[in-house]
Length: 228
Image 1: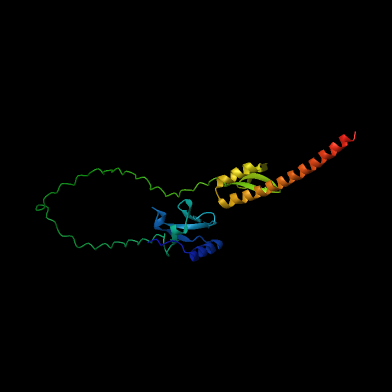
Image 2 (image 1 turned 120 degrees about the horizontal axis):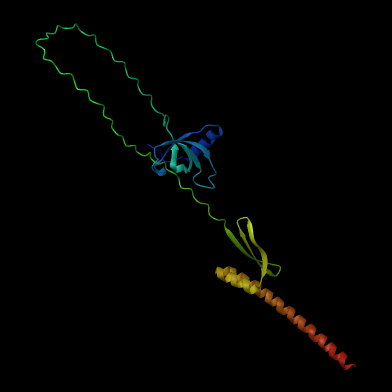
């Protein structure tokens, strides 16, 4: 009967056996489906961080990935055919002395009729299909859109996997505020509003200074005009 899957110690032992050049035998468990009870050979252990099905097993002519729960360590002698006993030679019994036969008293037995051998047609059954594990299709790389603020400017960038789709470009503060509003996170919105408030206050102070300087320049210009 198939076991309950490979333990962590058994996976470690299989990895050491593969490093030594051996291919340990395993038996498929009930979670492997219709091939449960069959015996295969482990030919490789891939990275378990990439996929749960990292135990590559050779079954017939196929090499398919399975999870540790699909296989168990095969017991000794599993997968080997037992030697068939040789038939013992028949010992012929010695024939006894022939008894005299009276021809007149023995009825004549007609010779048996020879029958033609019958040829039976055997319908060939299709070979059972081997179970093939479905290969999971690899999805597209993740997409990252970044809204950043630095040195008084708001920028937006986009990247898919390791490929940059859009380099950081400058956006207006109002556009940045609309983007953050779509996220609907109060903490983020408050941080953006504080930044915009600080920028607004600084801009108003600078405008007041410029207006004061402009007033002084206009007063100086008026004095120079009166002096003509």
